[in-house]
Image 1 (tube, helix red, strand yellow):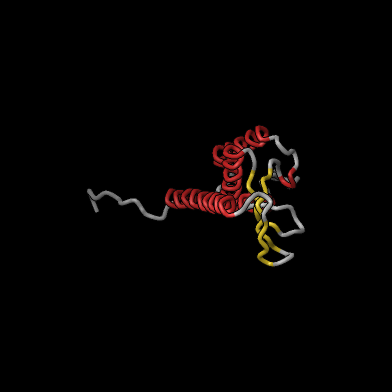
Image 2 (cartoon, one colour):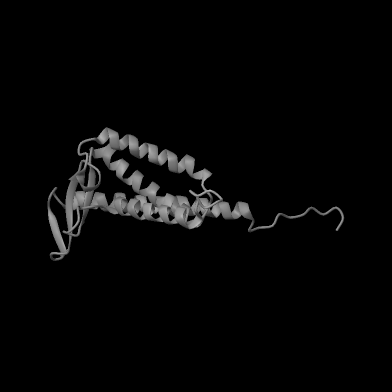
Length: 171
């Protein structure tokens, strides 16, 4: 009809993009909250080195102060790990916008960001990372570590699935 303004349609690309950004932020914050709450609870309930068997011989809660990275490597290099974490966070937040907005890739970025921030908070607050999940056959770890490992696998899968690293000739 003449003179009537067209109403914008809902459900467009902008709305989907807003939902995806919200999903990314919420997932990152949930990971961070679970990580920090669990670490805080462990520190209130356990002394360093104390262990509680939940499944005897298989799974324990064990409070470990980890001054290094995975498996305790590069122990007491706190400044190095803070710088690496900040660089990773910067790359995810600002570099992530240059990646295709594919769901698995967004999921991986949220997992990586939540894990990186969780362990960064520990390093800046205490000078070490609080670990407590102990399967006895593997070094003790935490929720942020799980998030980082799963995020890396999802990131690799997303890259492989979408061949972001290959040119058009498949080389």
